[in-house]
Length: 413
Image: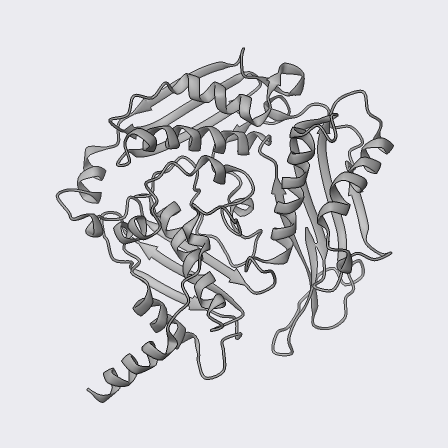
């Protein structure tokens, strides 16, 4: 979804496409994307997270780094898993393929006849010793190193950027239409994008896999009737909104027969649709000691809490870790100049450090991340969700009075 946004006066727009996308001064277009659970990369995410859930269900302390890959009728699962759980990996892989909707080779894969290869070893003892050792749960070290990003914006009630939020809603509706056979011609693979302002939707792009029996004009009519009208807020749609519905005309070959799939290749789809930045680490198939996942969830929790507490309208949180080290190496707050009157980003950084303990062990405990909740995250994005088990989406309303009192005490010393 590419969106036309209006900037405040203190922002500036540089455009290299002035002839094609000539906009009023202080406006810009922004594109976000989402893909369905049947996209080959998302299928691999779902397989990896289904294995993670199976391990955590029996052994909450499982250490899992599970990757998946697929092409044609071949699915590979590989990586490192240390667990006391007894997990029938091949059975879980076939069930995951079935749940996504690949039950016939004509759709791109058949769970019954797929060739499954499993190559899993145990986690390195050196990594395990650095992360866990004999440490108290709150003091466990980060399971990997790098930087993680959290983002929140007051554009929607979910505090997500509007472009990406609508992308995910359209994908959810496409999947509902397929699973409930509202549009029986649909197959599992789908991709979506669009362009709009906070005032209007500029364009919408949908590529939906289909069977051979339906015509292109019928696809366009049904997508308008059963999907777009159900999702797009009508106050943003006008006579200039452009629709690109299955622009390739034919999309019958999809799934792993159309493209190879690999865990962790849709990291922007999984997060904020290009807003705010990304640390580069994927989520799926990783247990919560891997801060690529748990700290990214915590950073979203922090960002959402700042916006929900009216301390800013938009914010990006960056947090960095070193393997085996429990305390973050750095925490950065950028509110893009939207901080509430009387505060600045230095204040917000202090508030974050006083209000949130971002050690991995504490994150795991407070967000209850040892539960088997991850297969659900493999489609529809990890953020902006309403499921009750996703505790990182429940903001902490920050006690500003208590922070001010504490700051005054510190200044008097």
